[in-house]
Image (spheres, rainbow, N blue to C red):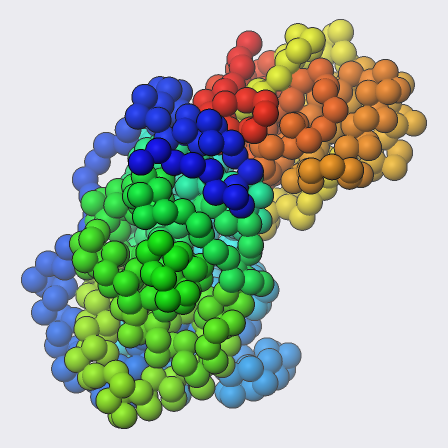
Length: 598
């Protein structure tokens, strides 16, 4: 059945048909990565080790293994009074070590906002301290430490960790070998910090320009291309010893509600799901992915009950387990998100997630309540002991497969030998070089000649930079263009129009330009009206140029980290030829695979 655009999708039916056509252009498909799958295939050693651990655990310890919780502060014992107060208010304890001992936690997730991340050696030391706390409590089961290091728009750990292009930038490069290399580098650095599960890559196929939560976190709109890149990154992460976690099953790409704040509804038919949303998840399973994260979305064609997918037995067990044959760990998205809390209370959500077929319960808002609710469900018979054992065994097998039972500790003094090395930084520059897309060059202005156009003005949007970058995007671009022989200055939009006549070219950074009237539209309009030669650079979603007045040239970088901006600056200056191709169509302007070069 041919895909028809849903009412909530802003893509035309013709555009989406082009995305999913069997004869998609070669430029839209990545070059295939090679290498062995590093799968969950639980071998006899991992299975036996896990079964021995399970046999010595109490019910309380088993239930604790199901939970992955946040902690506060940068050390396990929590000497910072502010951290201790937050712990006490939210989690009922005063340190991470107490939390692990009380609830027999199976895992911990790191966040910058929780104070967990200061610098790489500190993260490694925190990981060791948490592992020692787990070793010294209960059954002594090692923790699975995790984070969301997608790169690009979602980057939890910044410099000096190597920062790599995000998913849509890799989709623009369309090179699965580069995607694999990026994941292998990231995985090696995470493993050096003691983090052995990454909630990446994103397997959602983004076919809705209005999607507020996925966008550039997706590799693109072509399910075949997304599948290639997802499989490559699974191999890269797991080849480096880190469990990859593809998300958000069964697919979050055609939503216009953010599941952090509401409950999105997917209106694809079952046939449309099979054509658009399923292929990347199937490819991940075939590549041997360790874990799959569920989405807090209603998908009526897959389950008419109206429950979010995280709580849906037909979706988690019927489709993911039985149809796709996935035998690894299923983890929920955060249980603190609004999408999973609207229909049921926080006491019921973890129980229903387990009944649906999930294994790991991620970051419940009230860990004590969630833990007690699961215990009560087992003791009442609503959940059987066998059902709990099934999930715990999968989690233990994953820990065994990733070597945590042997020695979960890392060497903090050796972090610098792996993290942010010259080799990794050089590889990141090489990967980023292929991502910038030249969308329009109507006046032949690019590449800029520093002799003919020596004075550049950089202005426009300055979103918060990805963690650990060196400054606002306009300042970084001005610095990089200065290094390439131009006289470049960064000015805020309020001063840019008046300053434009004193500059040869104005480079305007844009960030998620809305449809209709906006301050970003007004800025570009006023600069063009003043006679400025204007080049725009879409820092995030590449739909921006279609929502702005025509300009001399338009580029897309898909992210705004230092490496992404350096690559864009080199394209502007002609130091590197643009080679990126649109991984999503821009409605009304450019098709999938569009991209100009010099």
